[in-house]
Structures are given as C-alpha cells and as structure tokens.
Length: 143
Image 1 (cartoon, rainbow, N blue to C red):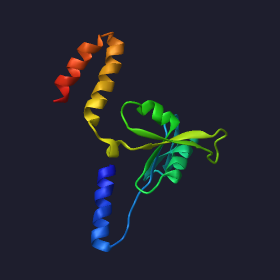
Image 2: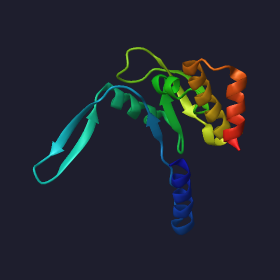
Image 3: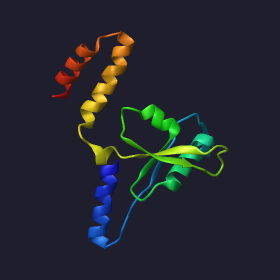
Image 4: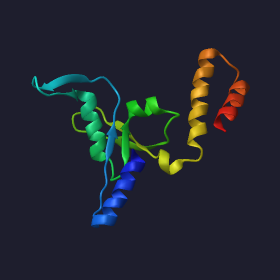
C-alpha cells in the first residue's frame, strides 16, 4: 500500500505540480462494529478506544509515515522494522504510551528471510524442533 501511495504521489506531482502525502496510524485491539444506513444501503463502522487510538497514531505521523501503537508493535515483532519514537501523552489516554514508526521499507536488508526466520522460529517452538534444522529450512525456502 505504501508503494502504491508513493507512486500515486509522484504522479500527482508530475501531472499537477501538487504535493500529496498520507499518514497512517495503526492500533490493535477489540472494536465494536455497528451497522449504519437503511434498508436500501448498509455500511459498517468500527468504534471504540482501539479505533480512537489508531486515529491518534495517524495524527502524530509525519507525511508518508506509518505510526503504530505499543499493542501493534508487540504483535508485529519480527515482521516489521520499527523505530521506538518514545513516550507520548495522547488525548483520551490516561497513561503516556510508546509510539513506533514502521520503517520496514527503509531498512529492507532481507525482509523476506527475516520474516521467514521469525515464522520458522515460532513454528520451531511449537514443534520443539532444533534450531539448526530450522536454519536449514529457512535457507531452502528463501531461495
């Protein structure tokens, strides 16, 4: 998605001379999904603290940036390269919280093998495999 938005921004700049940037905020947690509309047209929307916190992450993000909450950072560990931006006081949140920036695209050394290794490590723990066997599997699937 980030690549598509960057390509779109370049096209807008080329065709119209305008700068275009998006900010993305991500939080993970429980939400309440409600139906809105009438009998002819129905849509759904998510509500709750989780959604509000994602909006706060978006508000903090720089143009083109993706900011994530500590909840999401924990879930994404091993899948994304995240920079800890420190602790922020956010409206509607009682305690200051850590905010992270997704820098995966700027730190792509070998993201695919890193993700494969992380997934294999998780599987190895579940299957109680030995790490050398896992490394062998990673090398075979990465190429």
